[in-house]
Amino acid sequence: MENIRGDGFANVPGNSDLRGDGYAHAGADVKAPDVHVHSAQANVNVDPNVVDVHATNAAGQQIHTGWISSMLMDAESERNFLDFSCYVIIAAAVAVYITLHFLPSAYGRYASRAFGILIPARIAWFLQDLPAVIIPLYIFFNCEHTQLHLINYILLGLFLASYIQRALVYPILIKGGKPMPSIPFLGALAYNCLNGYVQSRYLTRFAYYVPMEIISVHFLAGLVMFVLGIGINWQSDAILRGLRSPLSRGSVEVEATSANSIGRVFDQDLGVDGAGPGGPMPTNHTSASRTPVGQSAGAGYKIPYGGMFEFVSCANFFGEIVEWWGFAMASWSLPALTHAIFTTANLVPRALQHHQDYLNKFREDYPQNRAAVIPFVL
Image (cartoon, rainbow, N blue to C red; front, side, top):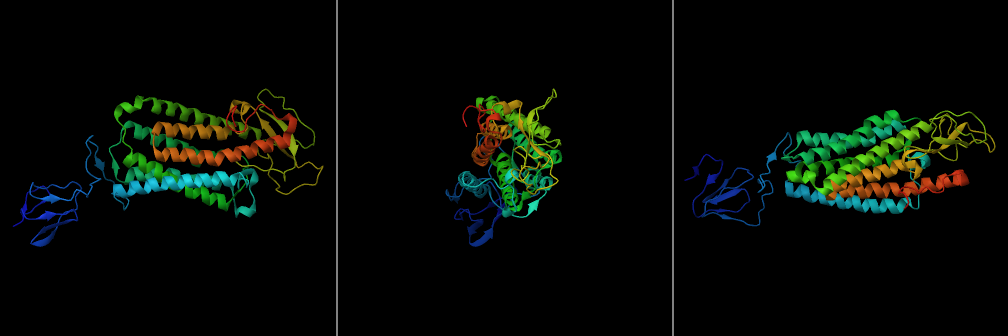
């Protein structure tokens, strides 16, 4: 006769066999409760191949359940899915790196209708980066997660701070950004959806840090790198925005003379170059058509100076690369490393293209000591 002990488990007779399949086998099949930690007496055989990944671990880690308990996957399956997603992102990074060495980037100065329908810059940047904000917040408040330590909160906060700026602040600050074709927009949207899930899910369910790790070398060094990188990125974007002001018409070189000037001004044919975030931009976007040779288009391009632009052509890219490698070092995890690899693979070829574009456009007037994206190296 079944004896209920009051602890939620079935006390079955001695000849029963609890196989781990959710049923207690004793005379008749009796469905056992769906529990995470199974209690069995000495005469009950437990299948050793059944691993309970939800059980409280030896370190006292506990599971907290939100509105959604497990995202339709148990912990072991979800961890395997996260690892698989990381390998997919790394493979995509290799493909992107190789492709961008043969084809120009499909947005910014290289934007073209050949890459799809053109989407206004502010709308594109807002929509493509927004999932990296919404998905982590949704997971944090609504999904099952482990007991989080201070490092988990710090890392998740750093990730959110970066993407809140990218999705909510940066689009407002854009001055005349070129429209983004739909193909790179959809690619960025898909990546931010997957990466937002991977980073936040790892940090809320699988990343376990001991309290003393907050003073570890890798965490502190990574934190410094992240703050330094994001600061360089934001400062560099501000410098580029400062260059985008209306210019007087003319075909001669104009030397900027104000005390706070940060660039040398040239009038250029608007049809030769355009730009989006990450490169010099025409400062007047009233026309996207090519003007006749010898006629000023009334648009100017400037050589940026100040900050890390004294050392590299694409200081904003350099800052973003440093930022995410710092995040990877602080997190010390495969998901964070994956994001750093993809960021580098995406930005380095673009930086080399921008650097060559500067050299072709300004020739001997361009500072010859500047590298493309890594000071003194690349």
